[in-house]
Image 1 (spheres, rainbow, N blue to C red):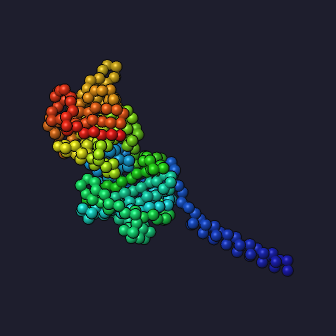
Image 2: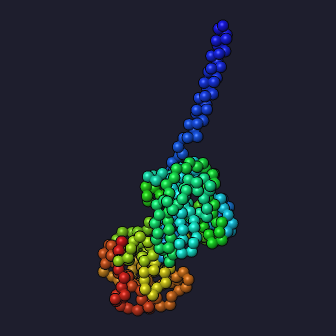
Image 3: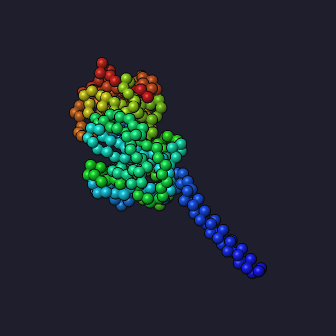
Length: 368
C-alpha cells in the first residue's frame, strides 16, 4: 500500500510539474517584448550586402528637407529588386502609417517600434507591409489622417495605433519593390528628440552598418566622428543653424533656410535654401571658408564660418560656389544678424566684390 501511494504521488507530481512547464511556456509567449536600449538590437533591418550607402543624419534635400534630417537613409544597390525588411529585435510595434502621394498616386508605409513615451525606432518609405502588419492596421483611412503639401506634392498621412509583438528577424515589410524607390529611412528618437539609431544595435551589427556610412552610392565614406552624422547644428547667437522665414508657416520646411555643415564632409559648409527666395532655385549651395589669420581667428566679411558670425552690426557676404543642378553666375548672399534670433538675408546678382553690402526692398527676414 505504501509503495502504491508513493507511485501515485510521484505520478501526480510529474503531472503537476508538466502543468507548471506548460503554464510557464504560456507566460513566456505572452511576456512583453524588451524595450530599446543601447546595444540591444540584434538584427539589421535589411540585408546590408544589398545596401550601397547609409546616408548619415543631417542630409539636405530642399525644399522638402531644407533643414538637416533627423534620420538616416538606407540606399539599395539594385533599385526595383525587392528587399525584406526585418524586425531589429524582440519589440512591440505600436504604430503603423501610410503615406499617399495624392499628386502622383504613389503609396508607401512606416513602422514604429519601441515605446512611444521612451525610445522609438522607425522605418519609413516601405513598399509594402507584411500580412500581419496589414491585418493589425486594418483600414488606414479610419486612422488619424492629415493632408499637407511639400516639395510641390500633396500627401495624405494616416497613422494607426496597433499592438503587435515581433521577434528579431521577423519579416515585417518589403522595400525597393518599385524601380522608383531607391531607399528607405531609418531613424530613432528618445522622448521625442531625434538621435542616432545605430547606437541601439549590437557592436557587430553596428560596425557592419557604419561601414556603409557615406553617400548614397557608397563612393564616399564619412569618417569624421560621429560617423552616424549630426542633425541639430544650431549654434545659438550665431548664423549657424535653421532659420524660419517670417510670415511663412513653420509646419513644413519649404520656405525656410539653413546655414549648416555638410553631412558627409562636416568641415565643409552648406547653405540650404528652400522655395522662399524669389529668383533663386531651391537647392544646396556650397561656399568656401576664408578669412582666417595666422592665429586661427576668422577675419574679413567674405565667406566667414557660420558659427563665427554674431550680432556685431556687420553685414557679411557669401560667394556661391556650387548648387545642385548647376552654378548660378554672379550670385552672392549677404547676411546680417540683427540680434540672436533675427537674420536679414538678400540675394545679390553680383559677386562679393559688389560693395557696399546694403539691403534693399528685396531683403528677407528670418527668425529662430
